[in-house]
Length: 66
Image 1: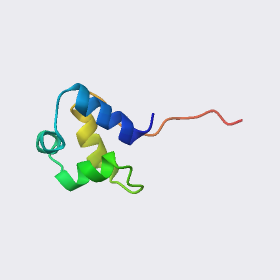
Image 2 (image 1 turned 30 degrees about the horizontal axis):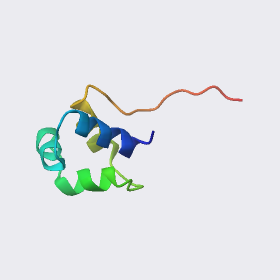
Image 3 (image 1 turned 90 degrees about the vertical axis):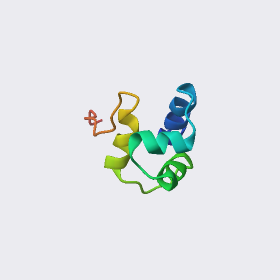
Image 4 (image 1 turned 180 degrees about the horizontal axis):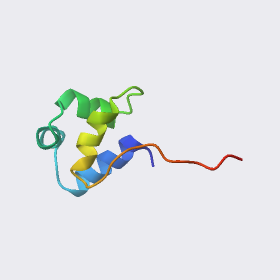
């Protein structure tokens, strides 16, 4: 599942509209729409503002080198 799919699924699971999500997270409606549509360049701090509503955070994860 991609980040846009995940956020959209979480929003729907919580019964929120895009407008409600933008208001509650403190980001603009345009940002929410672009994020859910899979825009390639988004500010990570704003993505984390949205994810914080669901008790989640986006960040770097250490991977093992092959």
